[in-house]
Image 1 (cartoon, rainbow, N blue to C red):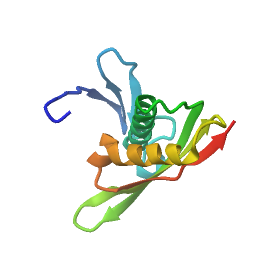
Image 2 (image 1 turned 120 degrees about the vertical axis):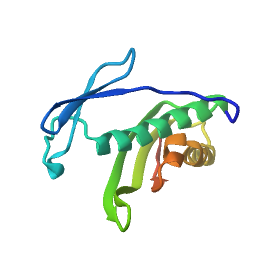
Image 3 (image 1 turned 30 degrees about the vertical axis):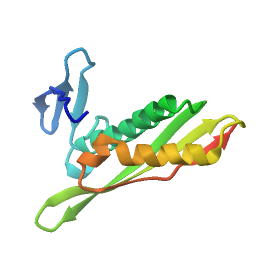
Length: 145
């Protein structure tokens, strides 16, 4: 990917008070706004939610891609993610860390150690995680079904 370059364009439009919409060509419009802790509402995606969701989605896609390329059969993947926003001296508010808890379901024939290695690779190679300044940590649960 070193020689490759991709661009992603979005548009944000202010609606009222602390609310607006984001758009990207070919994608559904998403209402966005400040969360209640910043004088907004709790019925729209906040930038903080979008940031944590982007990390969570990127880790999932990275994991699934590595698993597929490694011919590691996965039956299921669902992950919750929690990000922490804290005030950091001289920088203001920062997402200091994100904890992702994937629940990965595999068959009884799959070696658990192999799944753990793919999780570690996904944790290391997720480009959204690598783009953030904060720590991203995975705490996987591997389920055999």
